[in-house]
Image 1 (cartoon, rainbow, N blue to C red):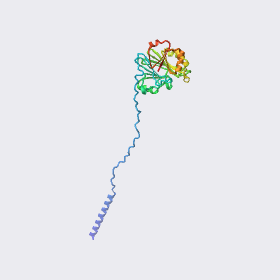
Image 2: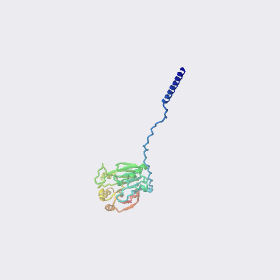
Image 3: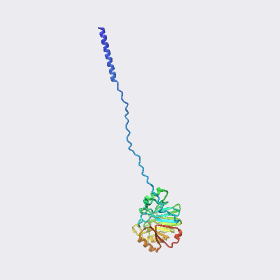
Image 4: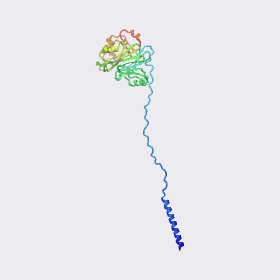
Length: 291
């Protein structure tokens, strides 16, 4: 009997030991994989700022105002050759200094860029300026730009003076509606008078303009723009230049003006080249139309 009790106790102990071991194994936590929950990078919606396309420079026009004459050169430089648009004049000194006076409708896409050393604009009307041409010149290199400014400056062998004037019969010296530009070049005194439309010049203006060799001014009869033949006749009588050349013009008005002034020496040309000796030979005033 004691042996049986001993065996029974031994069996019970073994059973209890096995159960405890089983519970311990079940209570152990299974290892987990080391997974990194990385947040995916957000897409970069920012794009690099687009740079404006670089425009090819306009090729230079080396022929229109080429001057090998040994004299001062003058030429109409607008592509608008009708009477209303005829206001843009190119002037080139003996030394090659280029002036573009009231450039408008410049045909840079077909002829190339006339590189100017000086650009002057007499007033703010669209038929006397060309923003694309002016900006192209600024990009192409140094240029002196004078926009209806009462100033005097010198570039190379040319001195320029802006003089207050009126685009109508009403003239306020302190608030000019037009600026007359006078160029001193190669011993000549040349005026581009823009759309001057005063009934007559004042004594002060005549003194500032001085003794002219060449005057560019309207030969027109468009009263809504202030132009009449009588005004041009009066101004030419006051200034008495050696050469008078039309800006805005009508053939009928030009004929009236020339008849009134008794000008019989008349010519038309693509290019005018003159020096002081040539002008000294002219008696009175000669009319030259730049085609």
